[in-house]
Length: 516
Image (cartoon, one colour):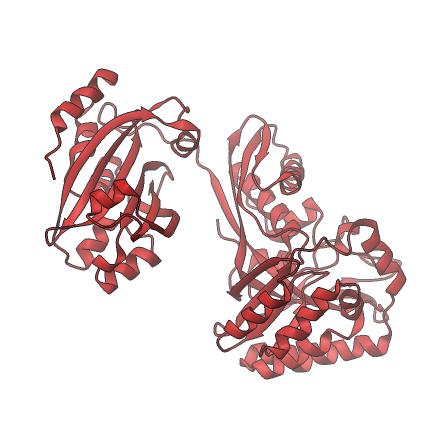
């Protein structure tokens, strides 16, 4: 490899940025760990946040840098190096690694953990050196500008180098950092801190009592899911703005944030960005999690910490089911106790959550950790929702009160099979209750209203070996639970969704709530 003219490259950079600081030069030219340099300069721990990771075919430039063939598989990892205290992004780095050149332990760390590459090499005692290839300066562009908190035309310094091990190129890396950083040897002031919320989806296994004869209604059981999740961030802003997630999600987040700001008496706003959302109108609780996350984010942004129940009441969620609020608050398997019912009760008629504004979320009657070794397969057909809006209100009117004998059967299944099945890790007991509940009470109505594909999924996933399968909320998501290899269940779901399409997610229970 021809030795690059680094002095000439620095001269080119200095024609565009005449006063490079000593620290900027060091960051461009160092042959040591950038992470350690950043920690020394910033006075805080530097963490890695993985943006993307995938195996891709090497293009001509990467093949040349890594001495491999064009099209050979290489692992592409894009990360931000972020200050643990300030949350400021110091550097964005993209690396390319032929995985067959890494020892198994180092390869596992690279693929599975947010660990700086320098630390991975150090932990695995790999003697390496860095060969600098290029340095330069370029405009940030819109995406990188947002990451660094600078304008799109602000200059960004960059460098490319390879890490060499045993005389062979091991990793090709490109790093970029804003030219304004450490211009005089000190980091630029951090942007106003952002609040980031990750909130979980949930399964709703069914409503318990829509008879009301004991003076209470609703009640329900649900499971908090490890995936999918909603990720939302909020920053200080004069006005209230929301971006990302699509029009409907943005509208829900905006309305929830506005209600919380009004309740707190805050005149300012917030800039909210939805980075990742839960499938909408799928029976996974997207609406509740979006509203709770947006409300919690703006509250914390303005110095208030509200409970999930307080936020739910402000934003109008949880008026029938308390499962979504409990999933946000604590996670796990949740049983809620419903609402008082009658002329002086919290509710006077049978209504869904969307039509129960002002009714507080139901109290949690029981919360249990969901067994870690039970896997959950989600089959989400690409079908429009069968029920919603006024039609949902009409269904409650048409099918309630539910017959008392069916409510008693539902209670028997929940108390004597569902709860002890989770508590004791007895999948057969739990599954027996789930399968029985699909043809009892209001869940029977919800299942009957589904597209034939959805009903076919419930039967087909059981036949494929799942211990149980059921409809989450009003669907169309069908869930199946197994404590073995889910491959056959997934294959059955793929076949049943082949004509109309859809999404399949293999996940587990999540025994904690939203993360800030």
